[in-house]
Length: 222
Image 1 (cartoon, rainbow, N blue to C red):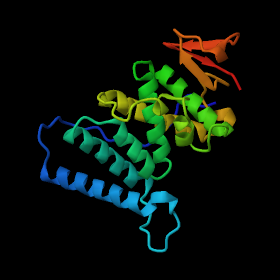
Image 2: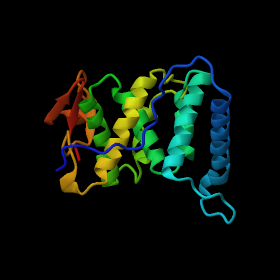
Image 3: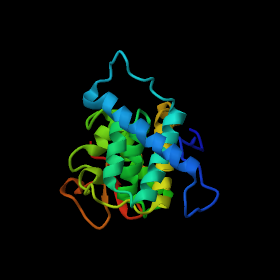
């Protein structure tokens, strides 16, 4: 078992806070939104096989586009959950799954410790591996009434970008961790496939043992 986890794709840190954007920043952000819009049209309705479609960007390039789009949305207005839902629909894999997982970690556990956030991500990744709730992370976390992503209003503000950056990093590490052989993965809540706020006791949690991390209890149900 490895003691450390490799980082997934992350957004570069800004070295200074600027109140105004430079011309180059505007150009990059405009190009990013243009690329994302074109990608949405090219791949809408799951038309992935096309004779004259543009080559899918590299992971590094797509990650850069995603980061610029997130920065752009914050500069123009408060970022909404609807913006992230749109990004999930147009980004290539594995960035779509990382966006879905990061948003879930943010909504469910942004006030929790790093271990608590890793545990929430672990539940989603375990569900993806089992396939009962879907074959991708996005399928899993969008399953009705399973995670906050399916119960939160699209108009909800994503107004803590520091917390979202951390959730993004957690999601990237979790995806990389689950790509490892089973015996090399770092687990925080082994076998857990459900979790709930410690203050409540759902019917499915009765007579079940749980691992408590912060404000959440993690259960192995299936």
